[in-house]
Length: 124
Image 1 (spheres, rainbow, N blue to C red):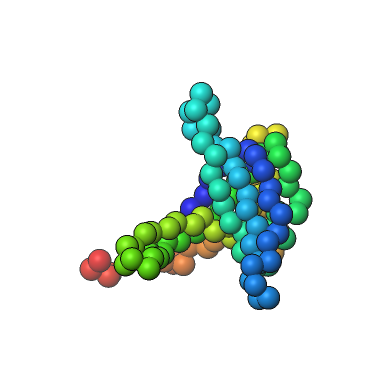
Image 2: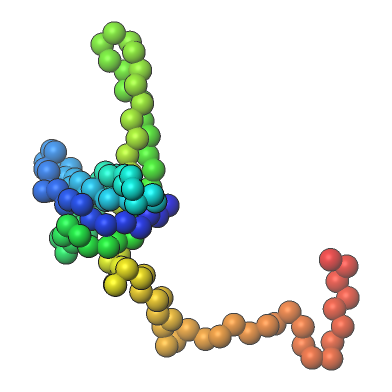
């Protein structure tokens, strides 16, 4: 999944345990500019470093996975939680996403389905 918006806040890296760290990113998403939404994303483990170069006001495109999990309290009541976990983030230059670059080594595709002058006798 992906979402384009403006960085509202970049949180500090939190060392949750010896082997687990995370960092929050708040994006202002303005599908309707009159009522912007503030959406919290999480960058986990080595992905936390992806947020080092971003600051409030930057236009970005965030690629993320939606995760959900149940949690049952002492009384046996189950609640459900959702997380938006970042796996890639790109800056949008001047409000327009940069064009994808095709590597020089990438050749144009060749149609090998038929050789000139041959009939295709396959029934499908």
